[in-house]
Length: 90
Figure 1 (cartoon, rainbow, N blue to C red):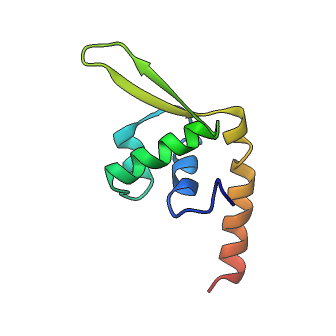
Figure 2 (tube, rainbow, N blue to C red):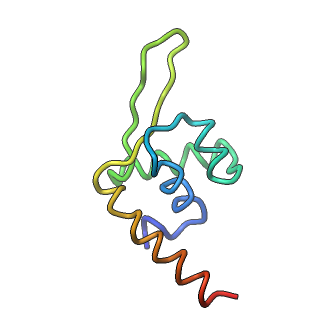
């Protein structure tokens, strides 16, 4: 529950399902979470080793986030939660 218990973390994890994403793309795919909240959640998920961050030294530099092995292991759990919700949460 510490990983998925807040409002945005499941959406962030799902937004990274198909590979590395930049901050703005995660924000769009996660449903428009405000930047401050997204930054806090990404930092927390990084501390929990769910997400890894990579700074790419280009001009200008940018950052990509991706799921770790531990993060990818959450994807089937999120899918099951979505299935349960579709069936029973009305």
